[in-house]
Amino acid sequence: MRRLRGGATAAGIAAALFLTAGCTEQGTATGGPRDAAAGGAALTAAESLPVKGRAPRTGYDRDRFGSPWADTDSNDCGTRDDILKRDLDDVEFGDGGCEVSSGTLDPDPYTGKDVAFVRGRSQVDIDHVVALSDAWQKGAQQWEPGKRIAFANDPLNLVAVDAGTNRAKGDGDTATWLPPNRAYRCAYVAAQVAVKKKYGLWVTSAEKAAMTGVLDDCPGQRLPTGGNPTEAPARFHAD
Image (cartoon, rainbow, N blue to C red; front, top):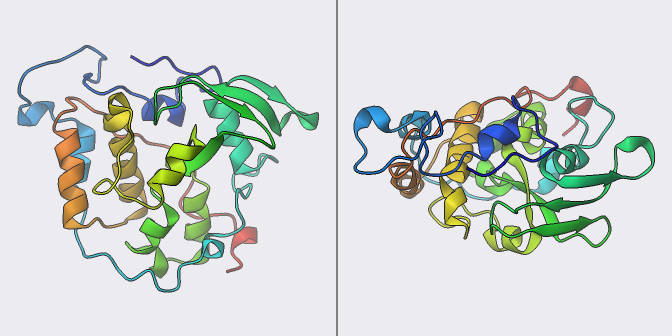
C-alpha cells in the first residue's frame, strides 16, 4: 500500500484518496472474481449516481467558480498552499509558514514518479479531480455562487499532481481520461464518485459505465469522505 505523506493526518482526506487498488477495507490483498458483497462503498455509490446527457458548455468561465484558491476554510492560507502542504514531502515554507516554497511529490499519484516542487518554476499542479468545466456541464451551472466556490476549493476534489499529466487530462471525465499510473485508478475513480455524490452532480451513461468498470476490479474500495462544507462563507458569494 502506498505510504501516507508526512503532511497528511490519519483522518485526513489524503488518506482516503490514496488507498491502493486491489485492497479490501482492511488493506489485505484480494484476488478472484468480485461478488456483490465485496464491491465496496465506491462501487455502490457510483451505481447510485444519476445519469443525464452532458449539458452545453455555454456560459462556462473559470471566474464563475470564484477567485482561484480562495481561503474558504478561513485558516489564513490559500487553498493551493493548503493542498501542497498536505500532499508534499519535505515541505519548506517561505515567510509566515503558509506559502510553500518547495517540496516533493513522493510519488506523484498520476504517474507514480517523484516530482519536485519549487515555487515559481513548479512541475506540480493542483488538479480538480472533477474538473470545473465537467462539473459545469453536469449540474454546476445551476448552482448558486457559494456552492461553486466551495466546490473549486474543496480538499476532497483537489490533489497535487505532475503538471504535464494534469494538463493532458484537461476537463476529461472517467470515460475519456484515467491516470497513467494504473495502481492509482481505483482511488482516482473513487474520488470522482465521492465528489459527484457530495455535490449532486450527474454523470453521462458512458462515464458511469467507465466508473463501474474500473471499480468492479477494486474489491472493498472505500469512498473518500470529508472536505469542506458545500457552501462557501458569505463573503465569497459575489458572482
